[in-house]
Image (cartoon, rainbow, N blue to C red; front, side):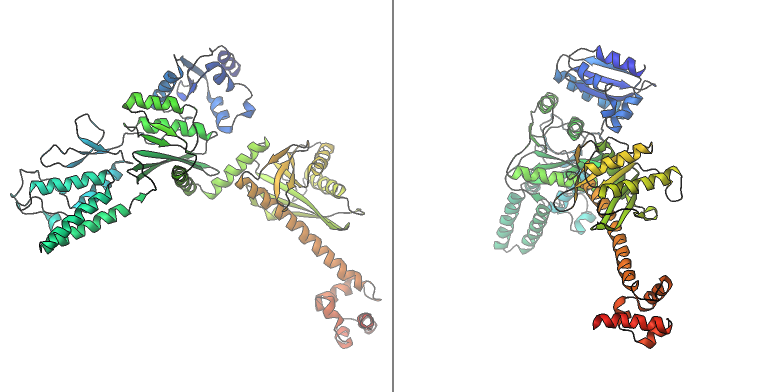
Length: 605
């Protein structure tokens, strides 16, 4: 279908909730979306495409045809959207890279000799299940930490069948097992230890430590020092295990905390899992920075929990999502538990969300390269200015003092970096008095006349012109370009009270704030400072040269060549004024040397 045909079809859709499925010319699903009103949502893709983000424009350009499924309600549309995304894994939806289920730890205390096992999902068999954890490796680490802490069996022996049949294995001799296969160890002791393991899985480290401490003291009073020493070591292991967890203020139970962080190029969705007030694990997904962070978090949240097989009692979010209530209902339908989705506003929960967001930002920053940051910043700058991402940026500034030694600088930034080989400076001619607008007109006319003539060093065309000054300076630039029949994007740089560029302004007077984006604010500020530095350095050079030369002009017999020789030899006027006549006669004729000597010494008199 052509673009107009797609637009016409979208306008015929009903004002009803449902799901739309975008397909490419190979009939492959490339995007799945949910809408409260299909006509409004789908038609937006085919109207005013210039306002779309680059990603959306690319996706729309790939659409060959689309299908819609009308739903009876928004909830039904949500269920259908989740199902279709999981089925088709569309290219332009934000997806979890790994949506497989998460393992659990199973413990059934009804058994005579209960054991902790790793299982893929809970079952309705009366056993206790703990988790899910971040993955099989993480779950195995939790199991191994508890086994070593309480010195539980790590072999393949079955109890009570193998009790007393063989010698203890290597784990016993390495002090990693309490030797439960020996006849001297009772079933009651084993079950008591497994109860402690259950409490550790529930996060009750303090209760387990108290129990072990009481047992240790009792054995010590009975002069059973070897057993007391063993329990002392176990107590230390439990305390060490508890210190590995981040204990938060207050009491949290079965709570997930969602965080979101982004750099110029990447974003991260992170979930911190809490149980009994302890931070058990962190899971995260890094992906390209989305156009809409709310939509991204909403999409990933659905995929995350619908693949886990269990919903927590409470989920703390960094911001509201549009279909949060519907999503909670979906989880209740799937798992029989209605979780509470909450955006905290104060207290400890706010700090937990901040911690999750900090974790997310650190992960996003870790995988964002320097070049990727610059590229994303330029892309965002282009989006803010409604132009293509600028590769070559040229900035101009005027420098003078009371209308003397008027100079201009042209600084070039290529792909976000200074390109000093393309810097140019201009000594303005025929200027009387201070006329910044006239000076800007002259320098821009000269620069782009050179461009039209393809003179060496001026051949490149800019993607963006930045003019140091406000809207009037930008208008001067537009006038010059119009006279030369050229068109380039032009913006003025507007400064704040601290002489930093706080905004860019169009020739029509529309200000575009940049101080609310740190990356763009730093880039434009760097360009502005470099342009000013280059201009003021050239102005000082000319002024110093003029001052030095003007005083020597008053001395009879001293022409341009002799001035250069004197300055080369003595470096400064003060050193020249201290020279004796014989020293001056080494580089000047006798009459000229005497004139220089008397010029400085008459001034002293």
